[in-house]
Length: 449
Image (cartoon, rainbow, N blue to C red; front, top):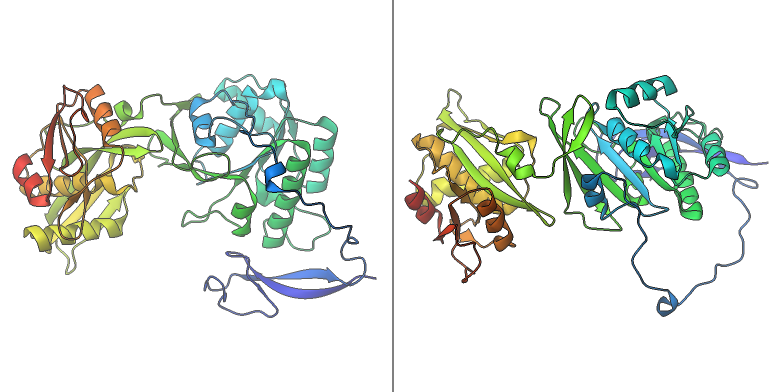
């Protein structure tokens, strides 16, 4: 007869403890340990089988994984070229950002190949209403309103679909576990069962996951380690554009992004994001600069907006939307220390127009120029793009894939580009684009203002 014991597991990092403590020893978060009852003794685990047969690495056949497209080019780009049979993809994002909308569109396009859509949070009627609103033909999609993972696996065994969509993993439960759905144990065990089924049958599985208020995926971190691919659907609910970004991908690059526009008929791919992000730019306003970031193999032009105004607080405000606030503080410190631009009594607000989130250091120079433009209330040239990384001593450092960025800028009609002086060579830019090489922040300020 199986016995049981009690353990405590952290909901944030999965750390296990024999007793309850207020602060997790693993991630140092407070009040995240929950109680679990674990079966021990005879009958608690299956009998061990014979040792597995190992193979030499040289005997394993090499070659690219077979893929099949979803029919949505931007989604395929993020996945690395399409869906790999047997892969498990975790789709995360804020509530209402469009995760279920995207999965419904993918399921409808892949319906002829066989799709099982597990709607754990909705009824089949709600999924049908969404499909009608999106105007997609999902008549062949098989809907299953179930949260028992054993029943789901039995249905998958019977139907043998090519693709399964689980919406969402936090609603599933395993009957033989005493914890509630969404707990650490339930999420971990349900994900392991789905993973085992996907690998043994070749059924590609999309798992929708919730996120916490700080933007991280809810549940144990082990969930992200178990799956093959983790993608985040980012964006502001008040903006129409969404960015699908790969955080982890065992079958492709994690640098690619997919850009979508949320319309009344669902998420629509954006073929030329640069043109969309610059469509509403006010060319005569101060505090505006155009930068070029590279996401994977795709150059994206975006508008940086800065507002510098005298502060009314003892400590000036530093706010950034779409950019790291700590990086902004660093750039402001460099401007003040190295170039003598006084910002200690100024509030500084920086925004990346269109809801795009930028993390690349190549946008540093554009942000610095937008701040100086707003401080001096002088607009930058409308046909100029700014590219460069800023160092702590005020130098402008080189950036990778500069030729790709310049080609994209020339294609959109820009006439000049402020670029790092280091590493320039003949033929790096199109003939229609005039290069303005700079080696320090002061040179960029003098050339533009």
